[in-house]
Amino acid sequence: MVDIKWEELGFNYIKTPYRYLSVWKDGKWDSGKLTEDNFLKIHEGSPAIHYGQQAFEGLKAYRCKDGSINIFRPDENAKRLQSSADRVRMPQVETAVFIDAVKQVVKANEEYVPPYGTGATLYLRPLLIGVGENIGVSPAKEYIFTIFCMPVGPYFKGGLAPTNFVVSDYDRAAPNGTGAQKVGGNYAASLLPGEEAHGKKFSDCIYLDPATHQKIEEVGSANFFGITKENVFVTPKSPSILPSITKYSLLYLAEHRLGLKAIEGDVLITELANFKEAGACGTAAVISPIGGIQNGDDFHVFYSEKEVGPVTTQLYKELTGIQFGDVEAPTGWIYKV
Image: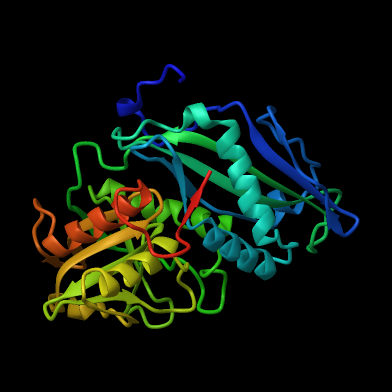
């Protein structure tokens, strides 16, 4: 095992020995390979750096109590990357190829998968970019698909705890834009609103729907969910929301493991009082409990600014238990390395 203080890890880049690299040229992907080179050499005319023709993913590998390694729902990451590729006119990476590449990277860097019980995981970043001698606004003629990885610490230092968010005046995405795709432009557009939220001492900002500014869409770079006073798990539904794999996992678990009614629907910013608990969800944090939301002059507190609600806690324990192999997973959710 490598000499790393696992309990002290944050969410930062660490060079690991191997990454996967495949090149698309003349209408097809090559066979792909593992490489030790952590730099990509691309042409100065590459559409990825001029016009944002790129997409990425994020997923994790988990060390189980018996020492084996779990990968959580990589087939869903493959499908989402395919959707993103279609939207910005890039060739798809087949699901079987994607999953095999993920497994290769995890296996090759197995000593960097943190030990069970540390709360740390191996984070994988698949990346698909358009490269080559382009200068006009048109799809690239060549593409690179790569996956690199690094060990990362638990998102919550000191345990699961509520944080506060503020409603932003900015729009995250256009109504018929690329909000449902995991492309870099969406994240570049979030940097300024995020900085402004942090400057006001909030964890991040809440984005409302761009058409009416009445409905919650996303929380920073995560999806929103709430638990109503009638014990209904609700998460926003919109064509401009990124389809979070964590969100859909929580929807399933809320219904099938916790016995709640679980729906996608409108979450009006004026009706926050209907919710007794709320949170943001995504790969990095799994669940980030929301203590309160600042909307103009109004500050609404959900369960507590200090304590995590019981339903949110149950969901967190159920999902992380599945990921680390301590709780039985629904069929097809876990891939072993």
